[in-house]
Image 1 (cartoon, one colour):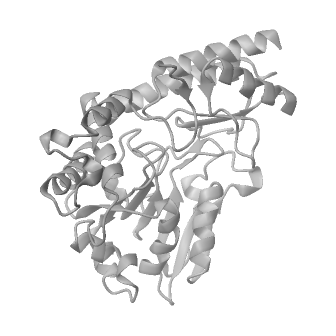
Image 2 (cartoon, one colour):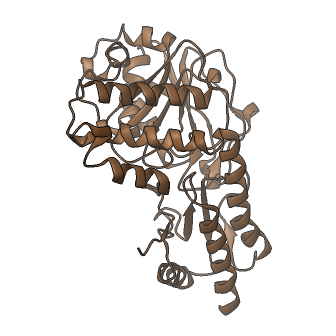
Image 3 (cartoon, one colour):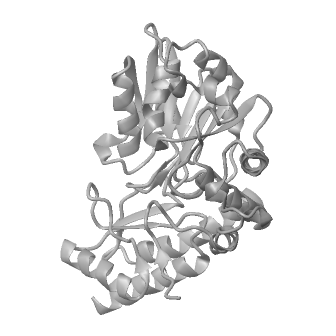
Length: 359
């Protein structure tokens, strides 16, 4: 099989053992005589898959009592409006830290619902860093503070999170499960699965009972209320059963490979390989992030666009795919989520050195 190293930002690479297990079980899930894709979401095997995924996530993230895990649809994009719909009242203001495109999109959705305030922003410096905690200015009557933990386009990542008396909400789509962190600092965490957690089609939400109770008071269609999804154990409507099944396999793979501490160490090792080439060749490779560099997405430029096009084309020839940077930044972007093997980053670093030498 002609297997490549997949550096696409999402949908992204999945662990090889997960794909192999899914292939083995695809036609006949655990002697049921059916594929997991064919089963009723009310059947015992699917109920067990969803319960197992919630339990595995709680174990890996050490989620304390007083939180629920939901498996929803609509991607992280739907969370952009569901959050203000549920938690932003007329006499309150939503607060947002703007660190990239997706943070801005979430902020713009909140403005459609009510009052929204920019608590901090690095837009003027083209999102090349994360604001310092002391520079975050929360408004009066704040409903919540929203942040994006990792910025896939710009290659920056929060190293420390704010601890506030108001609810803190985080979009962790691209770095959830990549490192340990304290869930109790947040009241709601959401993540589209297709970057670091599984395939496209399911969004994981970790939400406090406090916010579930607030959601129950919102005058919204049931499909938009977190309280309804929590009451129905993520089965208010037919959930995305196959994506949740794959997410559960990914969670089991992380557990088998040492949990979040091992993931964090391996992710640091992988990122160091690529950043070292950038840092040692500043005349040829220029990283976009000037601080708070991401361990998940590495964005960098070459001396000119023609060289960047040639870099991407030449990399594809040797099995390094998905390296073209986002149109808003240009250049090169390497997405090296949990499932990217160390060998993939070593191959990219070697290619970068060889390309530098010949150009």
